[in-house]
Amino acid sequence: MDLIEEGSAKIAVGSAFYNPKMAKLRDISVLFLRALEAKGKLLDATAATGIRAIRYAKEAGLEDAVILDINTEAAKSAKKNAKANGLKARVLNESVQEFAGSCEEAFDVIDVDPFGTPAPLVHDVLKVSKRDTLLMVTATDTATLCGAESDACLKIYASKPMHNELCHEAGTRILLGFVAREAAQFNFGIEPLLCISDMHYIRLFLRLKTGANEAVGSLKSSGFGAYCNNCHGFYYKRGIVPAVDTQCKYCGSELQAFGPLWLGNLHDKKLISKMLKESKGDSNGAQRLLEKIQDELDIPFLYSLPRITSYLKSTSARLDAVIDELKKKHNASRTHFEENAVKTDATVREVINAVKTVLKRNGIKVRSRSHP
Image (cartoon, rainbow, N blue to C red; front, side, top):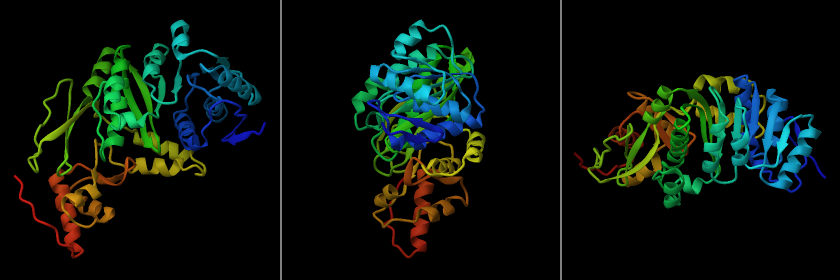
């Protein structure tokens, strides 16, 4: 059987699931653990080939590992691969629910990377968590989180999603809000350290904080958003039961509400700097993605330039020029959530005015609109 080399690991796939396109995410996960100098016990709750646990052991020093997979063939594959890579891990053919129900130990690092939604697994891995546990959670049900399957999002995550240019960031924040609510039941708060939306997945890197104040504080960092389908402005308010705007302050149109979802910070920029220092080469694109996130303004939501210029019935404006115009009075940046979009603390009125200024500077006529 041919061996696949990824990072410091050499594995045989066999009948277990292995996605080579996710090597970038595994590279980022290794950098995350190395930058934090993570130590202690690792739980790879959805192992498949065992590639993640093997790489975490060989590249980040987490050799005290428990590897789980409910699929018998996958568990056999993970066990063979662990042994072949010199990892003395406990490999168990059990579900996360079975393991968490009988386990009497707690883990320092937990990785949950299932096919589809992680929602049914989050509650159980929290049973085997403790103060400062590093929790990594992947969701590949982006159609649900990003609004293509709105009813499924309501059923699984108890949240109304967006299905527009905000959807990838909103989906990330919906998943964070869900984890915060689940964690609060165990007296944990969450500290987001890095949150990614890329390709077909969303990935959260969190630290759990212990105590009632931490749990309640995380819940209060969630809230609701509102979006204008006319001018593409957005509004949001934190809190358990916040008063959400119903009418756009710029164009007066009725707003579409969404949430609940996380409205706090998504990233620890100092940690990302350490991760970039740990990066050696960028064959899979991990460094490029981290650099985008490092330069990204860490505030909720974004403005899509194609949406704004469409509203103005104009040709497109150059993103860098709009960002430079906004930076004269505001903070502004690109974002990894959407290619041709800007994150800024400016209002939709100020963003539209910046776009108009850039277009007029280039000799492009812009239709006039009268709004309150």
